[in-house]
Amino acid sequence: MDYCKIDEALSKKEGEKVKIRGWIYRRRSAGKISFIVIRDSTGIIQTIVEKDKVSEKDFKASQKALIESSVELEGIIHEDNRAPGGREIHAINFRVINFADDFPITEYQSVEFLLDNRHLWLRSRKLTEIMKLKAKTLRIIRRWFDENDFYEVTPTVITLNAAEGGATAFSFKYFDQKAYLSQTAQMYLEALIFSLERVWSLTPSFRAEKSRTRKHLTEYWHLEAEEAWVDNEENMKIQEELVSYVCQNLMKEANNELEFLGRRKDELKVIEPPFKRISYEKALKKLQKKGFDVKWGDDFGAPHERVLVEGEEKPIFVTNFPIETKAFYMKISSDKKTVKCADMLAPEGYGELIGGSERSEDIDSMIKRLKAQGANIENYQWYFDLRRYGSVPHSGFGLGLERLIMWIAKLDHIRDATPFPRMVRRASP
Ligand code: 4AD
Ligand code: MG
Image 1 (cartoon, rainbow, N blue to C red):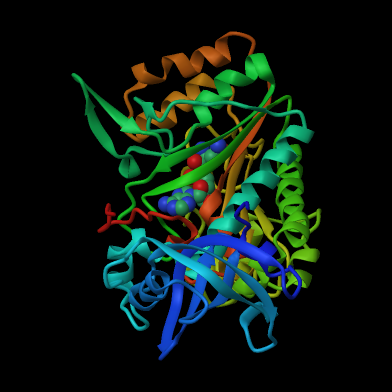
Image 2 (spheres, rainbow, N blue to C red):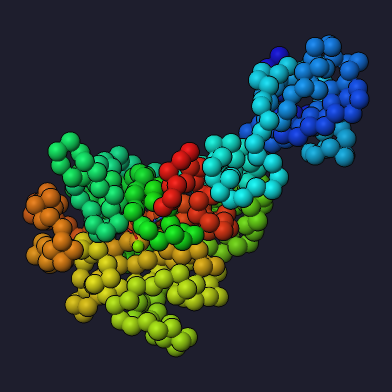
């Protein structure tokens, strides 16, 4: 007889025989009976192991096995309204694969303790639901890119270019030269549009940000796209379509996860194009009116972002930031003060989901801005070649996958959007 998953066992009828395997989630013994709740990737089910119904060896094992022991068993389905899921299994045999030691995680534990034991805490219900949601989100994203003529590509993460500024780049010794862990795949994606026109990639990006906030990881999964023949306006359309497609499809494909995490369907249902656009200049005025002490050239922080999305049900774009607030590769607007860029901000104060822009084609202006950052221009010559040999107007964007999950799953902290979070004081487990 084949093993079945627990969700399947929960749909069987009274009297049907099933064989399952998984881990002990909860347990209690009462004289001649062991009540054991088993967990697998699909759910939990209660099983009853009675002394008279199984061999002596099996019954002893059921009494001895602690939580998180791995087990397999065969039994008969009984409908019972008191059991979680309305079904329980009456075992006819019960085998322990591995008798677990005393599990270190009990009910009330500090955040630090749980992070130290992340490799075990990943088995918790909440993290399980988040990881499923993340996998489903990626599946949907991939589908969207496939349906919209993008090629998935695999850029490098070892680079000599700190495209987002040296201050937040992790450097390391690459044999006898100084290299960086990639902050963005953008420059490499730009090289690929000259053969493939529309490309996207999913890579880890690294940021040596000392800022210890709820929204910053030092390593995150970066979903980036680059499009030939696309301006900043069209680039925003691509982004709002992608994000809306994710929300609309998660609603259909991630019912259980969303319900467990407390994200209501009607909140996702409204996420449809177009998203509101507001210029940096207008945003600045709005903030000043609300009493914030901000002036032209200041970047927006979390409190500013929260005010800008107040009352918004959908993400919004903030466009046309001052040149000095943004990276060297963004195209300068005709006003000569701002760049053709857009940040997509999530509703409810979850912060920046996407940073995108039209790309500069003016080598001299890029060199000037790079020099101001103290960058080594030699390492950027290959990038300028892209402007020398058949340059075309093009745009692209980068979405922080964990930011997206943090918003959709309503997480208090970005660390729970990734299995092994890397933060200022944490590189283990
Ligand atoms: O706005 P950023 O820095 O843009 C770029 O890197 C562009 N080169 C992307 C591109 O055009 N191809 O980063 C893009 C996104 C942010 O909007 C945010 O969602 C996420 O990456 N992000 C982070 N997520 C988690 N932790 C951090 N420290 C992050 N820094 C950026
Ligand atoms: Mg940004």
